[in-house]
Structures are given as structure tokens and as C-alpha cells.
Length: 273
Length: 273
Image (tube, rainbow over all chains, first blue to last red):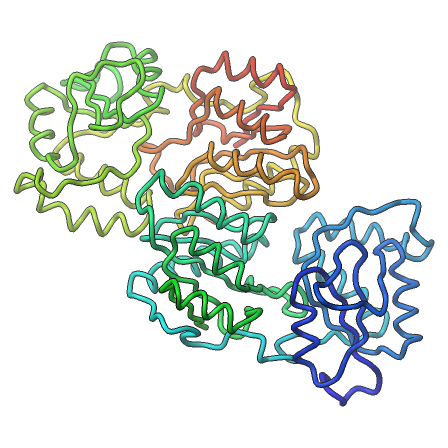
């Protein structure tokens, strides 16, 4: 599915951030690059910019360009929709999309995937297309996790598992067994900034682990959890001693720099199943 | 158990905040007031200040004072312990307390309750002793909850129910089905301040409901969820349109002022089972 096995071209449906460019660099040949208006991918020129209000004509255009498989990559926050821009066929999809949006991010993304599949596209996931972008099990850097880090990571995984059925949370912060924060729609950086600001108030004021995992049942074809150098910097600023990722399901952007930053700060960075 | 049925005196084991004084005002006769060192109750003179490191002598003192029932009231953050202050009998309890603290706040408080019960005290809860302090089902103020508020409140209740087994969260904020924040050890005001700071970033930038409930299985004899005027002010600053409490299980401090603030802002304040 991922390389030359398909008959047509692969397209990246790109959002913002560094992931689309990292993915393009990891793929064996350059894909068609489509970017959602308002969420430009960093360091990447789009072959086409599209809007949700004109999704059906955009899908037709992809087919005309010989695309038969798509891969979603990059961050998209719910775009504002301009009612005056809808074409009639896309307008018919609005009830379906709005219903899905009531159910949380996962439900929304599942609906988007279904629309592409219904239009005849294969939907490829990043673990399949570019496995080298994902954290594999074990230590990524030089600092080993302590038993306290591992206990906090276990508790964080249990918290995220509990939240999965209600479609909340790819991340949380746990220190000495205490839950310091749960990731919300505002994302990882906002959560780590909150912890950094609150830490002087209560013990423990340092230590603890940021746990980042895919939600159980999450569709890995969209919205893969991602960390990068900014995540490590924010974790250090929050006084944490570790970052624990889910092996095979979390993307590490700019891995060399991520590891260098973690090692320089003595931060344990590791992945577990 | 609550009034004159017992043979001895009732003692309040008080933490900080306005709850201990509100409880004293609501009780038919003045109880013995014991305050944890470092967490003075507002507007209330303690008959005795005690420290965790000398818990066993404190329990003996309560018995000498004729106390046979206790009621926990007020906020306590995990106190720092000074190893040099422990008496030998209290020191023997340390492993039990530390093990409980690894399991989260509920486990810690259950262990504290068990220590008082093992020493022969009855532990009375606030709903039993002063039911008038709790929110009863229905609207508390003049503003009715909209269907959107009610839907957000339902989703918030589901999120908190999912978190209960891992002993996290008495509160969360939901707007248009999106989880904006989950309460952590840093408490309600920190969470609402986070939402206020983040709201300009993403839609919806206004509206939504703060949901406050006891954790399923939570021991209501300690750590009852509590709101007061500051909570309403913080919810308004976070752009919320409602506060939904669990009927019979959330204390409303300074109720007249809480309702006046909510009504003045058009904030729906209601309680559901």
C-alpha cells in the first residue's frame, strides 16, 4: 500500500507543524501535497490548498491528479467554516460532520477518513509509510528512567486508558503518583506550561513524567501523537524528570535534537508498549 | 450520630478555607475545633492545633477532651513532614500513610479516616451533619441551563465517571462537547484560570460548563467537593455559561453571594443527581 504497490500517486493531506515535511523526507518518492487553508505545513510547498467547505471538488481534483491513496499528517484545529463558500455537494455533508464533531476529536477524524474512503481513496497511516518516524520500545536517550519515573509512567498510562472511552487525552503529567495535569483540546504545550506555572505551589515541586500515548481505539491513520524539541524544552521547564512514549504509536520529530536536549538536561526519554 | 445521640462531643478536624466556619454555624451546638498546623480555618479560633507527626498524642488528647465523633472539613494539601517531630507511636504509622499516598488523594484520606476509626472515633459526614450546606437538585439561581449547557454537563459527568477508577478529578470544563480542562491536584481555581488564559486560542472562545462532582466511590466523610463565590468569579472569567453540581454531594459556601454573582452574570447554576 505504501510504496509503489498502488497504481496511482500518494497524497499528503497536510496540516501545520513540522510533521508533513518530516514525512515527505522519509518517503521513498515525493507525494502530492495538499494543505488545508489556514494550516500551512512548515518548510513545504503545497501542490494544492483546499478548504473544508469545498471538500467534494477537492476530492475530484485529487482523483484528476492521479491520486489513489492519502496520508494525513500535521496539526489541524477545527477550522472556522464560511457558509457562503460551500458547494452544494459538500453542503450535504455538513450534518454528518457536525454530528461527528459533537462526539470529540476522534469521532470527527473518523468521519473525515470515512469521507475519503467513500470517495475511493485508500487511507495509509504513518507507522506503515514511515516507521522510522516513530518511537520504538526502549530508551531513546542516554538517561535511564528511575523506578519512580517508571511508577509515574505506569500511573499515567492507567489514567489515559481510563479516559480513552470518553475520547479525552493523549497525554498527562504524573509526579509521585499525583496527577498534575491532563491534556485537553489546548494540547501538550499548554498543559506543560500549566504545570510549570503551578509547580511552586505544591509538593513535589520537581520530578515526574509526561506520558504521551495514542488513545486506545484511536485511528492511527489520523492524529498520531507527536513530540518534538519544543516538547522536551517544555517538559524541562515544568521540572519533569522523564517523558514516556507509547512505542510504535508516537512520532518523534527532529529526533537527534530531541535526544540531545533530553540528554543535556538528564531527562529520561523512553518508550513502552 | 450527629446531634445529641452520641454520648460525647463532636470535633471538627479543620483545614483551611471557609468551610469549617460555615459548618460550625450550621451545627446545633459548638463542636471542639482542631486545626491542622499550617492550614488555619478562616474566621475560626481553634481549640487545638495539631501536626501529623504527632497524630497519636493528638488522638489521645481528643479522647481526654471527651470527643467521640469527628467530622473533617476544609482544605488540606499534603503537609510537609518533619522527621524530627514524630513521636514513636505515630512514626509506626508512616509506612501505612506513605503507601496510601502513592494511591492518590482518596486512598490517603481513606487511610486517615481508618486511623481515626481504629482509635475509636465515629466519623460523621457533612451531608449528615449539615445537609443545608449542600446543593440540592434543580436550579440554584435565576438563569436556566440551556440545552447546550445540559449537553456539556452530561459529557462532563461522563468524563469524571471515567476518571473515578483512577482517583483523578472532581471537576472538568466542557464546551460544545470539547473537554477544555480536567481538574488536577492544583484544584478548581487553577483549572479555571488555565481555561481563561487558553480560551482566545480556539473555538469556542466563550460558553461551556464547569462540572463539579464527587468522585464515584469517594468517601464523603472527607474531601467533599466545594464551591464558593471565588469559583463563580473564576468561571465567569473563563467565559463559561454554566456550573453544574452533583446534587447532595457538593458544598456551596456563602450561598447567597454565590447565587447573586451567578445571576448577575447570567450564569446557569444548577445541580443534578
